[in-house]
Length: 248
Ligand code: ADP
Image (cartoon, rainbow, N blue to C red; front, top):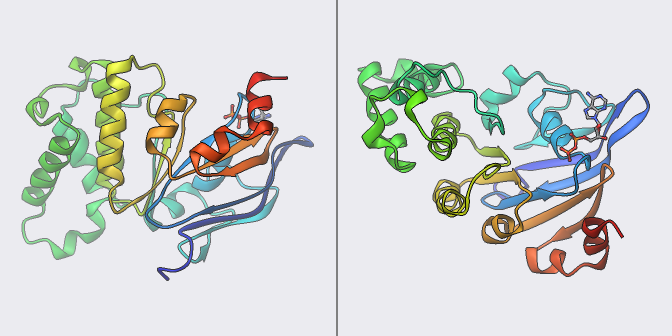
């Protein structure tokens, strides 16, 4: 199935009491690419993420992931298929250490836990993998520290490591640089680039520097509909996109 897109939505629509938050969206995400979703506030980006992960059921249309129709499936059915999501709002256990966060994610049924029967020494494997993941996001030296001791940017990096613990085919990132200063933004861009190697990523971000640095393809949403789609330079120069952003 390598030729088929990893993710496709077909005329995906979500109405809230007759109001169309997502309207007939056809999204195609090719395997191994980084895809940005952008658009003004209220454009439908969060609703679309919630439809992809099963947090919301569509009113009509379909979601196809890795060749399988996942329309209307629950989050706990979708996550094990290989979709992981990192949230905009940090959701860490403040008293737990970084390594414990990773070990918990790895032991979950959607993480490495699904392969427990293959592992001779399961906990040792979790520990090694937890340290590898912390190294990937530059937090190995804080492995034994509680999450509460981390700076904001480090907490976001830990959340990326947790999402990676699920070894997802598709990584969904909800505003990975929200609330960050320029240094953390540049660190996050480099980090997402590293994590995206050989993987498929869809992310929402308002920062055009981030979008331009990371995205192979950009989809612009407005009022729940796809306004434009293509490479960043092309989309950025699109008159309709400029108008939508300037509110003209
Ligand atoms: P974005 O993430 O692009 O800012 P959202 O997906 O959050 O946009 O919202 C799209 C539109 O749908 C907005 O007008 C919002 O008010 C509306 N909306 C989102 N969730 C709900 C809900 N649960 N009930 C009613 N309206 C909603």
